[in-house]
Length: 423
Image (cartoon, rainbow, N blue to C red):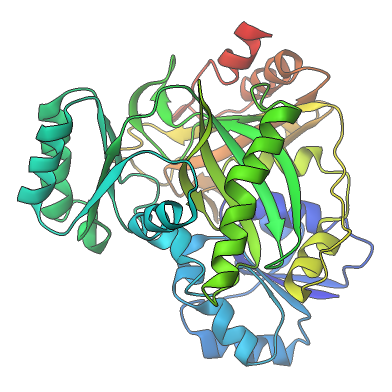
């Protein structure tokens, strides 16, 4: 099969690395790709916002499947336009992608389908949102409704912090994503990430993971797109997985089908495991980043088989197999992230890091300048390792971090702390 992968980040590098292992793969293209992805795919200069150009490329290269990595092309309807052109695509259509494109949409769906989630209000003006926050009190959560690259959420410990977050949204801090705001109850518990493939009817649960959103050790500082992750998440016991499937994933798939907008792709449920059970924090409609990196390290099944079956509506009976080993990834970011940061600093030592058994460095924000690998983003490297336990994977990942020569980068030093401290 010929496959086109859309994207350029660490998630897409992990997907390209795994897709390249499939015996069914003939050619793998990536648009736009990255230096890391180029190790496994032919990178092409396609404007992915030009859906017609993407479709023409697929016809010219006899592409059998398009795998969409990031959320923005899905929310923009790339999957719909490719399907209309007769091209198979992994990822939901525009309407189904609203599960990530609009937090308010998802909250309303949860209310209609009786899916457990935090109490909330939706607002299109600051004063109404401020009044709701005052009535509810702190702690409380403020979310920009639309896509904000993981930066539109404030978990406000005080009312003043919540009011400031509301004002920021409506003042344009997150662009059009903040034109509407969701203000919701602050759930208490432990976060976990749960993933499931669905072709609109059949569902195949995938492995669990836990992300670290805060920039600093001890889960301190502002939220980011993710500073590290590990899999499996110990809190997601077999019983908790069953409850999540029965109470959250299956009702969502059924509700979307009932609306005439069936969801085909991967549902990434951000969960809070409370004293009363799992509650949905939010949905993403693509593989997580950096969770995809640890999932791909643990996946034993053929990824191409699973993604193609999902796109083709033939997922019934499919099974995803996983290694017993744990995987852990440490994100190395540019100094200043998630605030302002500089690009262009030289990165060396990746080959030395990958010489350790069970280590892979996925490149999330890099480019080559005159043959030198340089940083070209906020989150730049995903140093990923496997081990018999999460503690073993953590030790190996940080051993690999020490081999990378990038003075302008930083990372958290406690990825996996919660699992290790309770294990």
